[in-house]
Length: 496
Image 1 (cartoon, rainbow, N blue to C red):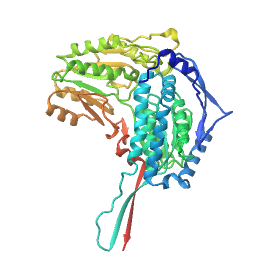
Image 2 (image 1 turned 180 degrees about the vertical axis):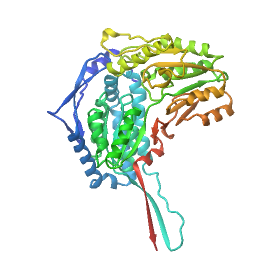
Image 3 (image 1 turned 120 degrees about the vertical axis):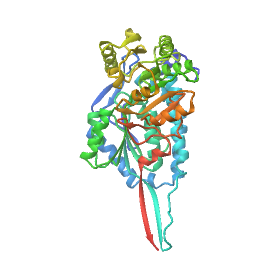
Image 4 (image 1 turned 30 degrees about the vertical axis):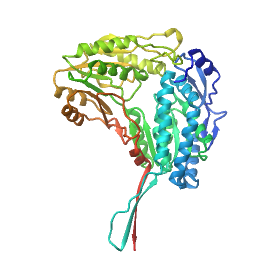
């Protein structure tokens, strides 16, 4: 992390050039149209006015992407050349890392340390990784009779609509944009209305780095208008979405009502984190459980929000987590010493608070947190919160809260733990802590989740896929498997 003081970050924030214009066909667009205010959750202040896109703006962006795909150079470049373009973009992103991190921190409340060290590292590595992968893929030629030749080729799918959330506005954009571009597709990116500014900057950086006009377009706007227009658009070939399960259902309907475009969904989660008595290090398991639920203010689709702990160790593990929750430093996201920043906004803070109130009403025991600190700042802050005596039927145990709220559920045997873990409509991720190799394998196989972490949480790199089962979605981000979403298989049979 750069050695920058709180005061210096505040000074740089005031001088930041925050453009709210759409970025379409290689240029900023949107002067004179409808706008909405981008409000910083750190203090409730308006950062800038953002162009509010509708059907016309989405049409313009899709048309630009279609031209770039149908007649532009991008899909026709040699894969190695596309790879070099993505590597150049990664270098420019590295040069603009501070500016991007500061924008993320201001617009969605993430601590500047996490924005710079984690969010931007992930973004830069994603473009670099897919840039290096672009020319490593091969087509197939299966063995046939001597009088014929069969070719199986992967071709870019076309225009990709990417709709991404606010909790990791650049990481999740990168997970979709980079593999789509590597495959030869062109992209229309719609960021969340809660975090448009970093995505707009990403679009401008792509143009500055040399991507041809129309290859990456960024359109602002709210989901029911701009998102719907993108989902229904007949010239969008693939729609990739990360967000809530409820909105994911809408995109499936939009596809059915338009051109049957392929829709790839990474949706909600209610991830279980199982700690067994034979965990190799109970203190580390408890500390990791605390980190996992409070990291990024709990605004994580993979957050281990259900702690399933054996009754023989429940008190010891819970005490460690409660102690860590009370030690966490909540504060201004621009302060490098801050460990937990602000939730994304007042509306979201209200929804999380409603879950806390409901938990209390349903009989769960509040061990720590649950209140709003730093109210005098105007920011949307919430104390890290821990409940135990949580019944599996309570809302705390069933619904995705997307905030720093942990539900502790005790179990007495391994079969019960697996039943509790799988007793959810979601299947995004899970954790397991044990020293027994056989248990690790058996339980990992039994858990209905796209990712299972054993004796760790939130670990991995770009070589492994990420995505969910059940109502946590379909398809995979990250790894070479992500390219499957953005390519079409074509068979060519040649009679010799």
